Image 1 (tube, rainbow, N blue to C red):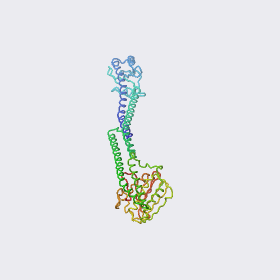
Image 2 (image 1 turned 180 degrees about the vertical axis):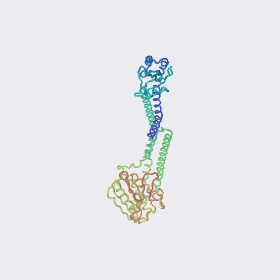
Image 3 (image 1 turned 90 degrees about the vertical axis):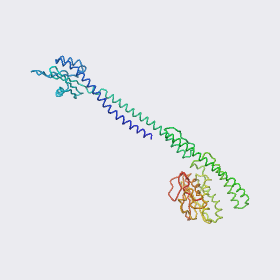
Length: 464
């Protein structure tokens, strides 16, 4: 916008300068010429009284010498012959005009060009009725005297106008562009998670209105996030009472593997509720993609740990479990608790939505720029993966909220990866969790996938 204003001002001012300067320059040139020939006419007219009295050569020479132009040798008088036998024309001064031009001037005044300038030929009547011609030479320098200086002044004024208009347009552009740039930077910062950013309300009225609207929107976003965190904290806090009852009941179950597993699950649930409350109360929300390698974990170790928990339940239901690819360390930029929650969501779906005895597997694949976790089962699969990849869509299964993969999606997208649903080699559903190690390179197009950080959450979820 700034350069557009400068270009418009430059073009408009240049057109105005050209439109006025060229005609004015021509007028100045014409005025200088008129001034020079007006002086020549005055010199010619000064000799008319002498010619009306006498045509004596000596008297005419004295009269010519008395004029400024005559003293400079620029005046001549052409007197025709008297018509008497033996009479000849009289020439006084230094004549430069051609004889034919002199004869033509006896009828009317003539201006004609000669080497070095121009001559004014003005007719003057003699007492005898004859017509004498007074010739006044006007040098070219006198015709154009002052024209060059006037043109330089005009050019300087024109350039000054152009420069001034460009400077004013540039300042106006800066006044408009800087608030717009600040607004754009603030919007980018707000999108990156810096919720404290605000815009200075200055500039044109429209941009001030935009800044006011942006600041109001940012305040609303902060308020909504605060309300959301408080709501999550309050809801999580309400779980403490039933958890306490559940823990007391679990303590009375006695000894045995089932009782120990129940007590361990209750303790883990209490820890997760405490974590939710602390996170929800945190005033500085973590920006997207804030995971770092230092805050990461070993994916293989977490998967082995969670599979040890789920394998016991799989044994009770007669399910065959296969685990592969966890013998090698796989450091990923995801905190341990979030990866565990994502795995629990995926494996919980298998147990909730497939019949007892259905086998499943978890495979870990290592690549240069990613760690890929595949959770597969031999169930009926999902008839419409695209519909299942819509947040809140349960895919027609009862007892499902349709938000099962929301946890998984956040884990993948925090690294630049994604989540995909396809058909497994076991014949059922395969959920592929792609965890990028380098910020997320271009992933191959395959199957139905969830990608990007578009607001609105999961566009893909195995129901659950």
